[in-house]
Structure formats: C-alpha cells, structure tokens
Image 1 (tube, rainbow, N blue to C red):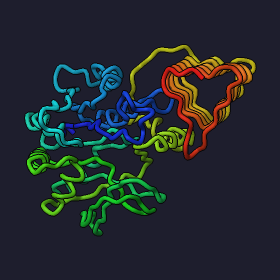
Image 2: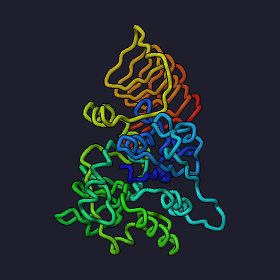
Image 3: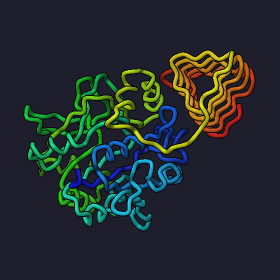
Image 4: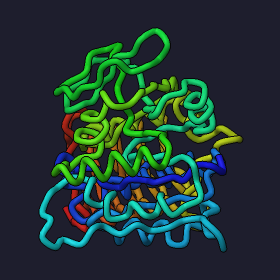
Amino acid sequence: MKSVVGIVNLQESHDLVRELAATRAVEALPFAGRYRVVDFALSNMINSGINSVGLMLPDYSRAILDHIRSGKDWDLARRREGLTYLPAALPGKDARKGDLKDIYANLDFAELSDKKYVLFVNASYVYNIDFREVLDFHKKSDADITVIYKTANEDKEGQTVSIATSTNGIVNDIAQSNGVKKGSKVVMSAYLMPVPTFAYIVRTTYDRGGQDFLLDGIIRHAGEHKISAFEHKGYVARINSTAAYYKANRDCLNPEIWQELFMNKERPIFTKVKDEVPVQYKDTAEVKNSLIANGCIIRGRVENSILFRGVKVGKGAVVKDCILMQRCDVEDGARVENVICDKNVMITKNRWLKGVESFPYIVTKNARI
C-alpha cells in the first residue's frame, strides 16, 4: 500500500446528531467506552500499510485536534509522510455547502504526493477492514474507480446511495434514495482511484458548481468512468443520527461484533492512550452485559450499558440501556434508562430519567439534573 495516499473526510452533517455534535464533529464522538468514531478510519489505514494520511478538518475541530494531536497513537507521527492536517477552506465568497470545496482547497495534498492511488474515506463509519484487499480487487477489475459497499441486512430510512452491479462486479447504476431495502448494495463513502482521476473529478465538479463529492462528483461522472464495487461483508454502522449512534454503541455489547471490531490481532483499533486505574466494583455492585471503562466506580446496578472512563454509579442507582460518557456521576438511588449522557453530567440522588430505544433521552454536557 506504499502506492496509496489516504484522505479521511470529517465532513459528516451533524443535523441529526445536533445534541451530541453541537460543538464537535460527529467523528469526534466517544464510542464503545474508550474510543472515538474517527479511530476506525485511521486504524484501518495504518493497519493496511498506508503511511501518508491527510485528515480533512471539520468546522468544529478542537475535539479532533485534542484527540489525535501528532498522530503518534496511530504510528503516524513520522519524519516523512505520516499525518497531515488539511484545514477547511476559507469562507471567502464561496458560500456553497458540502465537502467538495474543502477537498478542492486541499487537492495539492494528493497531487504533490508520489503516490499512484488515493483512498478517500468518510470517517463517520464504524467497521474494520483491510484496504489491501480493496487495492488488489481494484487492480484485477481494471476499473477507474472502486467503491466499497455493504449489503443491507434490513430496511432502513434516511438518505442513502445504493448501487446495482453486473455479474462481474461492475457498477451499472448508482443513485440516491430516501431509504434502503434489505439486500440493497449501500455505498460506504469509501473510494479508491488513481490520483489523476480523483483530481479530474474534484476540479470539474467544483468548476460546475458542485457541492458534494459523492452526489455531484462520483454519481454525475459515473457514465465517464468504469466503476467496480468491492463488498465489505463484515459489520458496518454509519453514525449519521442520534439513533444510529445509540444503536452502534449498543451493538458492541454483542460479543461477535465486539470480537470482529476490536479483537483482530492483525487489525487492532488504536486510540489516544489514557492511563486510568482499574474499575472498582464495590460490594453492592451488580453488572450485566455492559462495557465498563477504566477509572469507573460502581456501587449500583448496571445493565446493557456502556460506561466511559471515570463514571460513578452510586449505591442503589440503576443504569439500564444507557451510554454514559466520561466523568458522569449517577448518585445514590437515581435511575436512568435508555439515556445518553454527555461528559461531566450529574444525575442527583433519587432522580429518574427514561427514554425509549428508538428515541433515547439525551443529557447535554456538564448538565446537573
């Protein structure tokens, strides 16, 4: 993969995750007890042997910069190549939305590299993949562009881009829809192509007033290029709504999914290292089917939940089907169910909060209830 330069796109719309991503990118959201969503894109690239990675910064970039810093936890702090931050385009006179203007402003990152191919991925997806298999597939298909897709295992609502392929894996139709049916081939917003092809699509689309790389670039240029489709058969979750974020975290309570995502010795998921003391389970603690990060102190009952570092659960408190981010405190006798608590939230004694699985109750950062 020394012939590939990676670009990680952090421009996922946060409209449907507004409560959790009001001041940070979707990709900076804490995930599965100790990770961030962006960890998967970076880890997949470094595990696949891609040594030069450009990170397209979002409008709210402080959380991303604080988490990734020099990139040393992903082995990207290098004298040559390694991690490059690609800043968002200056506002200027160009008021168009979408990710295309930011890609255009940083196009020289790919063009000035000595790489033959560019791998462009959206970092709001959770999955574990070896991109070397994608490169081998791309070369054998003799295609101009290779897109990665996942076959939907259930009907879903929301805007989705799906493809239809011929028997040899070549894309013969690609379109956006407002929902997806079980068995559809859903694009995962990850594309591999030669650098000149990438530059041509970006420039021509931008010059014609385009806004979105996928919708205005790939789809509208589909007739000009031979596009092949690589199927990822493992677990995939796209974090594009609060419901999706809640479900993806709770999916990690499934041992098979956890094993696939995090226990592959050849493809570990890296994250920022924080040294914390082990979890303290007191005599009154009762824990079932949960992920509990280091630094937590448990005195109450925790069930089907994800607790990040430094969470405290008081005596007689009940935490069920919840996601509690760093340094939350559920005091004695409190009860929370189907709740997402952002960082530093305090649920005071004997308070009860309850949401529903399809619409979890959200408590914003630093709140006291």
